[in-house]
Each structure stands twice: as C-alpha cells, then as structure tokens.
Length: 202
Image 1 (cartoon, rainbow, N blue to C red):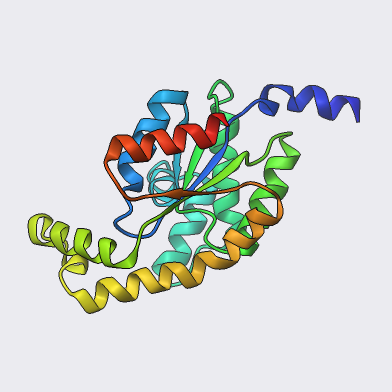
Image 2: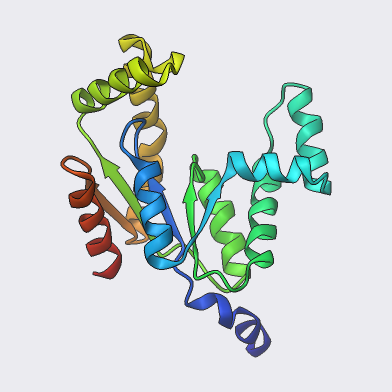
C-alpha cells in the first residue's frame, strides 16, 4: 500500500477538471483561459485519437481499424490513450477534460484509471446557458463561420437537446461525488471566467 502512495504522490495534487457546456456555451474560449491561468494540459478525445492514429501507436492502429469499419472506438481504448497522455506529461499541473466523459460508463472508467495513478477528477464545471441564447449564438456563428450544422435552427435545437439528455446522468454522477459546479454561462467572457475561477479556487 505504501508503494502505491509513493507512485501516486506526483499526481495527488493535480487539478483535473471536466469542462462541460452545450454547443455555443463558449467552452473553447474558457478552456484556453483555464489552461493559461493554471498551467493545465488540454485533453480532447478527438485530438487524442488523431494524434495516436498519426503516430501509429498500438491503440491508434486499433482505433483506426474500428473507425474504418464504421465502428465506435471502445471506452477502454480512449481511456488507454488518456492514460498515455497523463503518464507522458508527469510535470503537467493537471488537465482539462473536454468532450470526455460523455457517458456514465466513461466517467466510471476514467475514475478507475485515475485512481490507479493516485489522482482523480477535482471538479466538473458545467457551463449553463439558456437555450434561446445558445440558438442565437449558434445561428450567428453559422452565418459567419459557414459551419453547416450551425445554420438550421431545427438542427441547432436538436443538438442542444441531445446534449442535455446525454449530460444529465453525468451531472448526477459528479453531483453524487460532490464535484459538480454549475456555472452561469451568460454575460461577458470576463464575467464567466471570473465565475469559473471562483469555483476552482473556492
């Protein structure tokens, strides 16, 4: 048991944060600020998959094979990639988890893996923005960015509802651990940043 503690010591003080927010909540902007402010790494599963496939790692090759066959990459492969990233960057002060976990099973797998490393998720920050504001932001973004999925109000509303349905169980999961911090996501970027900082430092 003592050995486990010694192995885990560098990880114990990590600030691992799950950042949640519906499409249009400004997650990208806020995660950049948090990374700079607290010296955190950014863990996006999409980026991880692409990097592992490009580097032709065993997990990357496995993922590519599944994706080529039109299948989903299983949770254990993604969690394995996350573990590689954590152990490759022992000096990082922590990580922002962006886009993962998306299901309760993924959250449980992530907790089990982090626990083995002697660390864990410190907080789940959930940006909360009213649907009407999200629709307005996304349609505005669609008009300027040319992103096809941001042009139709029907598609935009569907994406927001899908997000709410999928994340509700995760909010319950982290709430039960006392780690959920809902963040009011309306107002200026600076105001939202201040709320995130208060939640982290509170």
